[in-house]
Length: 400
Ligand SMILES: Cc1cc2nc3c(=O)[nH]c(=O)nc-3n(C[C@H](O)[C@H](O)[C@H](O)COP(=O)(O)O)c2cc1C
Image 1 (cartoon, rainbow, N blue to C red):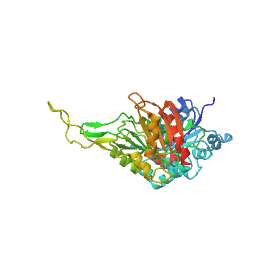
Image 2 (image 1 turned 60 degrees about the vertical axis):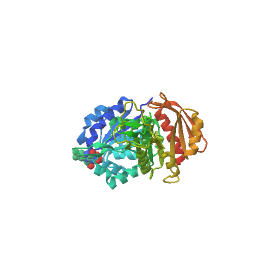
Image 3 (image 1 turned 135 degrees about the vertical axis):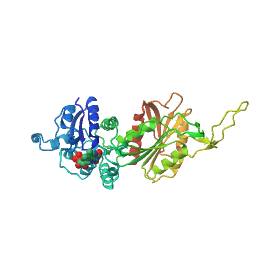
Image 4 (image 1 turned 90 degrees about the vertical axis):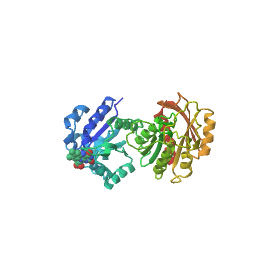
């Protein structure tokens, strides 16, 4: 079988050296990669590196090997074009359809999925011109990965850092796995909660649960690869931020509610995958509760936490907003799930059986997705990403 053909566009940012690592990962995992750098990119990493690592000639302009018409052929034959790093200038030229070098010609002739991984200083990223160019590219179907937050060129830190090459590679792998299918969540804002809340009892103790957050993170990563703008509201997962998602870190149910409601205000989809504690200690004791000789411990009174899933379902930002819940059940799994779907008022409910060695913390999951219209979609035991993709398939069909 022919190797999948990937065009790696590299534009002139300080992070160009990281694209060597992305190139390596792509070639070593069986992809035929053609590197198309811009003239500026060659100030950072030379043509010899790109050529030797890819095994293909490298050119920045349309005037080499003209008999092969590279300005048309490279794009036409690609299964995926990924531009990493994508400079502010590259995003502008791509958004405006310029064709003044080989990479921009390639972007105009490619009919395959296109992924941009922007990297620049925070000011350049936040400038309305850049944001409008990104919105334009997304509207046209490109996957634009949100930059990471961290160290930039020099001493600056902020949003604008190129995500880890391994993470960009994973986005490419997921996009390629979907074949020629256009990324179906492009232009959509999805909010996902993940992890388990911790409800403090005193400065050292809390009521918590076993949720690892892995299912929510799988939902975030797959949504990024399908082109969505993703806000991930996590609680106590300890997992590294997935690339391309805006991550909000919370701890308690009250904090998670506030973050979810804020992000949901302009969201197309809200997925509540977090295990939110139903109850919290009625009183927070400011000093550590001590055990006293000969005395039984005082009972811990609990109060109810807000029901975030029911609240988001009842007070949708728009009538078209889709709300997905998760139900972790130990007994009468389906019957309890159907009852919960009715009670919460969400569109889809992912029901899975949980236990000490089931689902929580594992890389796999098995579930049934119940829909408000009565359809039920069983998802066989498999990677959490497969369940995530089924959820997005069902959401995508309902977004229309
Ligand atoms: C040291 C240095 C680092 C740069 N880093 C970036 C960057 O990370 N992102 C960016 O958008 N532009 C960056 N620039 C500016 C671009 O190189 C410049 O806009 C150039 O015209 C981009 O051309 P290209 O998009 O054709 O590659 C940098 C420039 C210099 C001199």
